[in-house]
Amino acid sequence: MKNIDWKKCQLSILSIGVLFCVFSLVFKEYHRLFLGFAWMCIGLNGICFYFLELKEKGSSSKLYILGAIIVIILVIFIYFF
Image: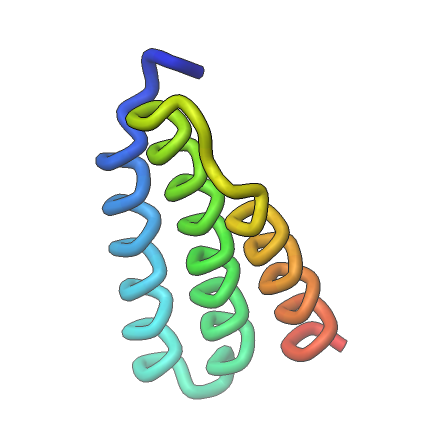
């Protein structure tokens, strides 16, 4: 996991999230589904930020992981049920 470029991973996940937002505007019948995927990308971005800070500083706050898990669980409950 040390060889992964977390900055590029973070930017690619954010761009995928923006793409899902655009898809939600284009495909109106799948609006909630694409917004759910966009929010999951935001949660995954928190995990990438944790690993990026861990790689640069040697330590990082576990709140990034906890926040990402909470966002993903909330998205599952709000958008898919």
